[in-house]
Image (cartoon, rainbow over the protein chains, first blue to last red):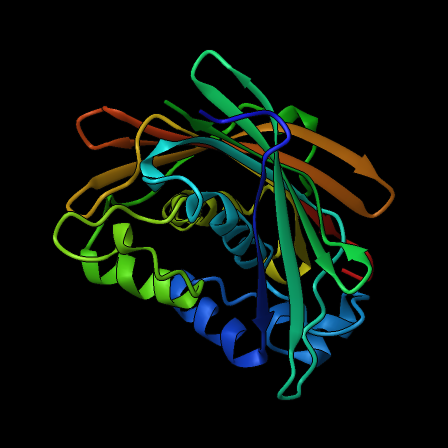
Length: 133
Length: 140
């Protein structure tokens, strides 16, 4: 039985330039702001940034790792509030995802996800809805 | 030309259906660092955000509409939402259609929302994606 207030096991991912290149290749999103410092600067960004969709994909793992079957995800949305800047070094950028059950009704649980890169919230209104039994 | 609110309602279908293969699902799962066993093997389903990649075939058509005057290297993704009827799975042949739903202007920045429907080529619903993009026309 899923209860309101349940905290899901947190997850920390490290994104390096290599991960952005790999995601660009796998997803077909070759927007240069995700691999080219010059193009990122031209758009006024502080540096090369992670694909929002890569951060979004990472964040929902907190939920899909927690439910038995990822097929039970019925809704998932985020706002990309702050870019995840990925430096050209071996350390990369770390993002920590936490999640909490906010509501349970009619066989569905609504889960709020928080994504922190350092002190910065990089996702806003990140929310997943899953079927529960 | 530049995009404006009169272009709300324009619809763009992906030129071809997207044939989902289990090795593409595995490659995508590896790229997002996700080891979930549901994304492996003959009965693999795709990770939730795989839907965006399938829908991006329709987004390409939208970006190719010269009347909108949009450039990929001036676009930042603002928000994304998915509603799933069922997961995408290996073997699916998916048709994607993107429809512009909102256009707002703030100086040189255009905020564009569009909705992408994913169905099987036979019309069975799979998922709907709602996307918000910011397009910056400064110095364009």
